[in-house]
Length: 223
Image (tube, rainbow, N blue to C red):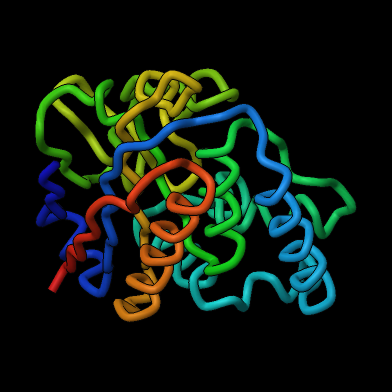
């Protein structure tokens, strides 16, 4: 899958780094060992952050700044890297979806990056372009229904939008039948080394919990 950062994104946020992981996988409804890791990460972050101080994590702070630069309110349309941690800081556990989605969420809370997760076989074409959402552009967020993606960063295939840092699209979401996936780690903080480390962590999680060899890892930059 070719990942292209559009000129409009490069002009507004040239420091963006994206780590793309493509892998063959086996998904399962639940994995006890994975959730032991998840609960430990929740505990560690709960001891370190409050809902107010959470915004100072570099990955979250940078994503919020990128939203504002594009004209979107990050408090109304929270990026997923912030929303996930905020949830358990408020005393709620993260949703349990499936092993692939859960390990994506684990990497997101650990590294403070929004990570898109897609079923490669549901993407139309062999290229994704990261652009900016348009007024009234149709988009169905996972579990959210129609989502206003105007001024949000959005990955598009030949059919339309499939992923934003706030929510991915129902059309290309990961399910228990997913056998080939694409993860996109969105490093709006411009720390390409850390973005790659997050990608490598995802590969290791896939090896541990998804009967995968970890697939391939590629870095895409806006500069």
